Image 1 (cartoon, rainbow, N blue to C red):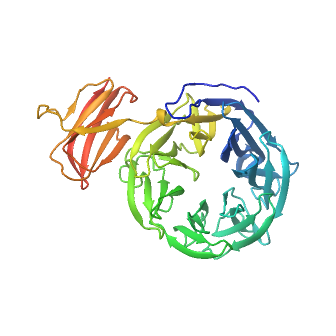
Image 2 (spheres, rainbow, N blue to C red; image 1 turned 90 degrees about the vertical axis):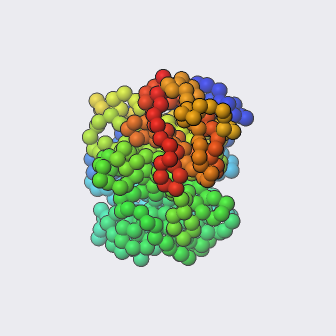
Length: 492
């Protein structure tokens, strides 16, 4: 395998020791990385390259990165028509089931064929299937998702359009069930959309302890309505429920709770406008689409971050990663990304900011590794024109603000938060509170770095803030939606 820039090696403080790394390499053509999966030896990452204006991505692209950060990559070209790899899941033998779209011509954005391949870690295609979409359907999007059902078959979910509306996603969806070799066992087209321009899927996930799958997206329920849709093992719709989301917000889930609820990330880019009430958040949602609880990890007047659909990675109940990035539009302004670590109870455990000088970062996907860390990757472009491939391997050590809760110490009454300034630990006295509360840490711009629910007051919360950058921060204790304690501290 190739050896590239391997940066930031360290040993994790977890039961299994593993290496964290970051890799990058220049590419001659624009490369977008949009999906993948892991086996015991490394991660498959798939996408496409060579964007030509409004004609879409022309050549398929794949990377296999081993657990040490060494990689091989491959571009797949077809003379006269386009191809794009969209998603991958690993098989028991270490190979990957990869789905994409191909076909059309070099003069438009249209793809007309579902493309399924079986790849090995050397990125050799050992089996390949082409399934033309039935008339009158085509697709110009690359929103294709896949997931195993309970019987080892793979369900593929794609957005399609009618020939008469080649530049619209108008609420029509194609579902395929395939065996592990890529043979289609059954298929259905859902054409009950409402002609909503912009209707599109955003995710597919298996419902625990059932034979059902859950689809996330727009157009299942009504025009431009974000919805969840359940399908049974025979690809029949069995229930559709609206989600109370704003039209341009995106949603994704990778995490079911034991009570039948699931966590859903939802983000929107809004340029930090004070009058805009969109924000970056994770919701707990019940099976019928009703919100149960919310973690807002950036305010509407401070958050400039959005996310693609594959933005959530569930490792375990204490480690759930959410990837966002600053979308600067079509210009080449340098931009960064923010990766948040939360737990299953919607506590914000920490934040990691990814920034590269003179580079526009557009995070497209994140996925788990065999070592239970998180890979984050996307599309990076230097402001002076060079395209870059970046893959970050992140662990909780990059994020977490450790904390402990202890009995109320004997301190002077005015010592609410001390020491101040501090280099490492901050103690916050939570006094005169006999019910559940929230404790938050954010900077003076309003970007949140920590939020924790506590079931009782009358105690001292000790935070290890050594990982925070030097500067001024705000701590706040919230009870029933109202601030009861608030103050500033300086991190040296």
